[in-house]
Image 1 (tube, rainbow, N blue to C red):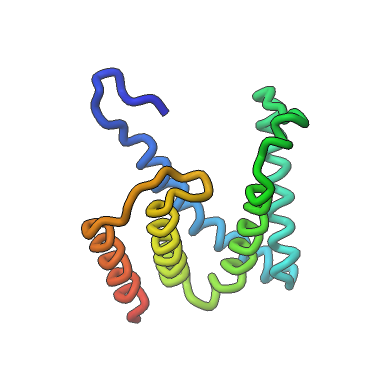
Image 2: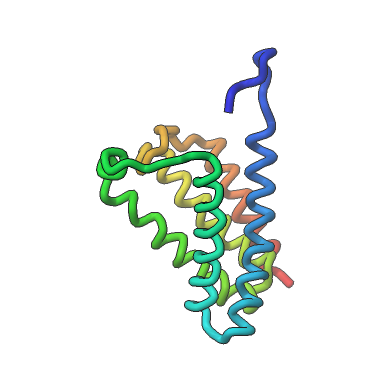
Length: 154
């Protein structure tokens, strides 16, 4: 996304990220319902990915997006396994959502994401630019963990 014409800060990426996060909460509930009805977290995860694949295929066809053998072969081998992590996330949250509740589940996954993000940013790995851990970033992560602990108190 391009910065605004006046050189200010665009908050659209921030808003979009927050909306995507809210969507994850809704997705967990939907997937858990599918799991409950069909009786299998694995099949519920397959349903999730088949529906997502169909939607993305339609968008790709409509937009004219194409992947060539050359572009596919340029992707690092490790990057192809992102889908496995996505499947593990969907399957785990489908099972854990009803057990933990939406707030606890998402607070715990957010804490895990933040811990991993600090490490990934600090070392600039897996496609992210290097952004060293600073005391201020550590304080932010500690406050997030404190928030998680408060959410877990019932």
